[in-house]
Image 1 (tube, rainbow, N blue to C red):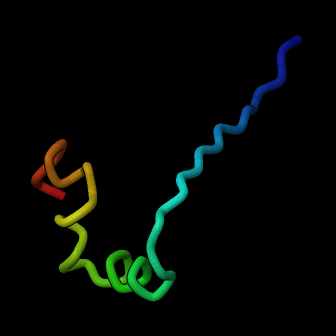
Image 2 (image 1 turned 120 degrees about the vertical axis):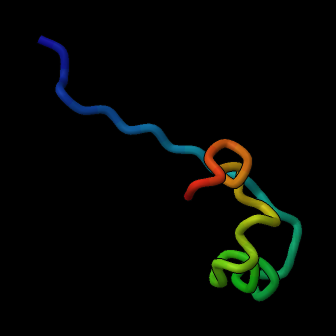
Length: 44
């Protein structure tokens, strides 16, 4: 029998200081700048 679960893992390397990345992802107002979901589902 096949296993019931599986894991998918993805990663990306971003050439920027950690503080700059945190600034972008920690504030919901910045999400439209980088989140693909803004274009996929504007109702989010």
